[in-house]
Image (cartoon, rainbow, N blue to C red):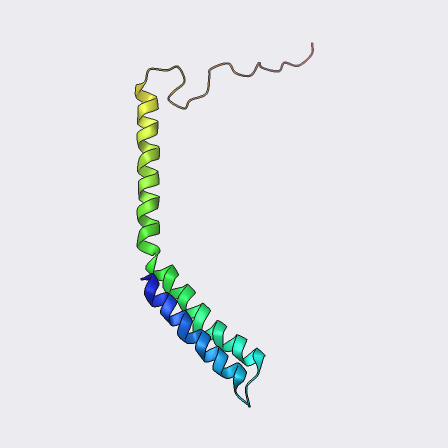
Length: 96
């Protein structure tokens, strides 16, 4: 997948160089050519092609969190269930 992206960036770079060195071309035109024909399409392609890997990593992270929570709950430690202690804060009373 990366070889295609590198090859496309090389082609876009060569297009930009041709634009900059042409007698009617400008450096600004070369930069615009490289950004719109090279960087933008490759960035979009890499984002779209990376979606399954991001989803897989997210599912694995959620599964690891679930397993850690189950292990903590099964360990028999006090308050491992994630619940607050009964009297953690003393009640505030009004003055008589």
